[in-house]
Image 1 (cartoon, rainbow, N blue to C red):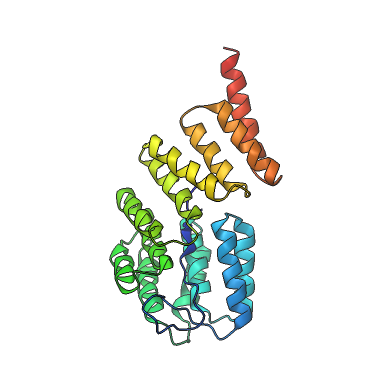
Image 2 (tube, rainbow, N blue to C red; image 1 turned 90 degrees about the vertical axis):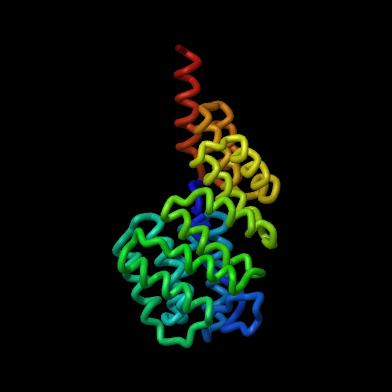
Length: 260
């Protein structure tokens, strides 16, 4: 499914996995006083990385129900809705994030600055803030994800690829990064590289539907409709809520071409 769905991104998994504010250079740190909220937040991130987006939104909102002042949960949803062009929801969650009363970590303060600029201008270039976040926390893979999203928003796809590759060097769970990388290569029409990325995604996450859905999208782009159908159906076999309409569309095109 389309990226970042890298995110966003994957948008976006624009996040950190540490609890409360961290004093370690390795981790950005997040601020919440609720262990339940933190647990729901972590589960939401995993759902996002596997591209179960409805589950992601539901879990993030449940996290916020436990801690309405949870900056990162509000930030995550704000960026999610910005990526999908839902301006009302973006504005709602962005304002909630900016108005959080909790004492934020250094990483959260940087993201708050970026969010304030995006509220003023949704096409603002805030990649400088994303780069500063990485400079501060070079060993936290989740510090790379905001920059990936910010680069995608301004269509700096070459820069996005460089950031994705840097994230891969330290990622403990690299599969979602390969998904975003594959779509970014497709935007640039670098289809050989896209195929390599999607094959790696399938290798790393063979038991969820999205890798096959993504590979199906790749085959649609290169007009190999039979292979697109096969991959969409593989996703559908894993989870029957996935890819069936895409598979039928690919089959219809393939059959039409065969009958010409």
